[in-house]
Length: 220
Ligand code: AMP
Image (cartoon, rainbow, N blue to C red):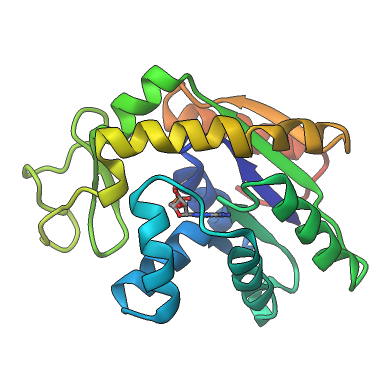
């Protein structure tokens, strides 16, 4: 299954992608995670990406598409993928379609998770991360001990781009550059809409039920 998760920052794409990846047994590919790993590792790509990410802007299309093309060459992508945060512009979507078309493949499902801006600002400003990959929220999903990861005891941190000013810029970027993708995929008949303001597990259930109704075969 070749699937895209679409939606504004803070819609819960990463969380849903992790569950869907485990259930459908296909890799979760997050361009944001790839950029953050490169920033952490101090690579040239990380250096380039950091300035865009920290200001709430998008990394240039050609750089981003190259990263995805390389990731898709890996063996685990043979039977599909869940794209989280890619594509984010219409040119990326067009290049992605061309990339998949070469070996005769295409995007099969686009899960569009919608959430109002006011909820997003609250969600992202309360988000806390752990270096082990787990994510918390100070109100909705707090750790047992304040600011400490339940699993590895490390101190939690706030993503640089989860600062309020940057959140606003990311939302602006989303509305200007990413939301046109809803029409792009709607025209191809691929969009399935979900209300991301519901509790995470409710949205997960709704997504899995809809996929089952589409006769996609999996055990959950
Ligand atoms: P995310 O973790 O998906 O919210 O991504 C964090 C940041 O990485 C975004 O705000 C962008 O600056 C950058 N980024 C992630 N994916 C893309 C993409 N497909 N195109 C351009 N920039 C991206």
